[in-house]
Amino acid sequence: MLHHVYILQCADKTLYVGATNDLEKRLHQHNNLKGGAHYTKIRRPVKLLYSEKFRTLKRARAREVSIKHLKREEKLELVRGK
Image (cartoon, rainbow, N blue to C red; front, side, top):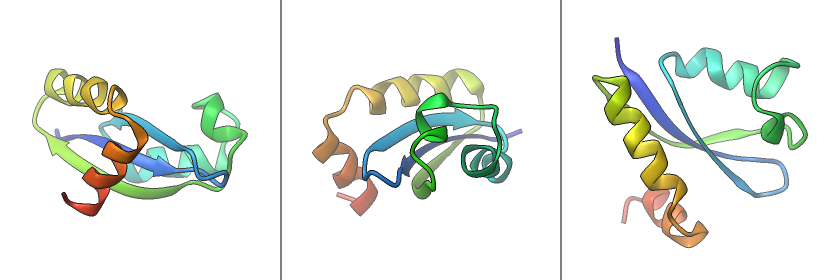
C-alpha cells in the first residue's frame, strides 16, 4: 500500500499539508464531507497542488512533518518543483 503526502490550496489561498493512504478519497472528504480536517472544512473548496508517494506510513508521516515546518514560500517552491 502506498501512502501520500500532499499539499492543498484552500479557497482563502492558505496551504494545508496532510498524509493519507487513499488520496482520491481524502480529497473528496476535504471538499465534500462533514468529517475530516476542520481546517479545510471551513475553507472549501480545496485544490490539490502537490503530492509525493511513500511505501511506508512512517516515511510519509516524517515527510509530512518536515513539509509542515517549511515556510509558505518554501512549500510553494516545492509545488513549483524547485
